[in-house]
Image 1 (tube, rainbow, N blue to C red):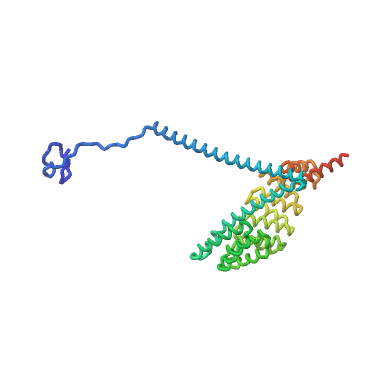
Image 2: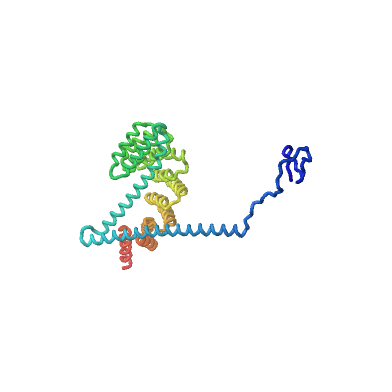
Length: 365
């Protein structure tokens, strides 16, 4: 075909003049068809997808194998470390350097201390963004640097005094930073320095009377100090701000129990474990109930704890003691023996089981 260079009309090949406008034709083009995109056959597409999936599956398998190897090394390492401690303890005991399980007990204490310190450090890191958000924008780089330095010192090799000095210096620079004041109060509370914790809590609440974390910690401190009427008011204020706080419900349950209000205590304890249904929460609720002689409630909470965690030896032990008090000796022996089997290193379990066996032998004779 021939296209007219003036009106773009289509003319038959061989024409000299445009059939439409009569212009002499100068532009020609061969007839063509637009090239269609090639369509991949379905079989080839499926094979390609299968190959991709096989490759990804292989890589995933390799990754799982690597993770399994790491876990096995960790488990093996913990096993050998524990056996090494046992061997050293036996050797030192034979040499009469240490008595019994002293070395292993010290090792366990160190592990617990390390876990607690790691948890405190993680908590400190989580609070830093809140502190920075309350700082003036121009001061944030300096405050961030000081907080990082304080964190390294507080959780380093016995440099806590230097870390506290830095935090106190920041507090003087920013007296209205209630998040920083709360961080200091929380740190002092964890170190059992309650007077200083209360001092910084008051600063935080003076700046922000609706600061939930400060109100909750103040309620906990009042509870620990035996000021139950004040604690109840403070904790109810906390629940007014955040009704889903399991710690507030748990602490208020303990306060109500201390005041002999069993139904209110049971309500708040049940609410607490419902909001955070963990073995430790159920166990704590059981402890509160047991301390005030509410054995039926205590049994319920302890059994819930071991239902969630069948290796919770302390919960088995406490159940055994309750059943002993109720003269249900067979059930008591079952729970005490389970506690001992789960943790044969705990002297309380061993002694309770021996005392029970001797009592049984005397009764039979």
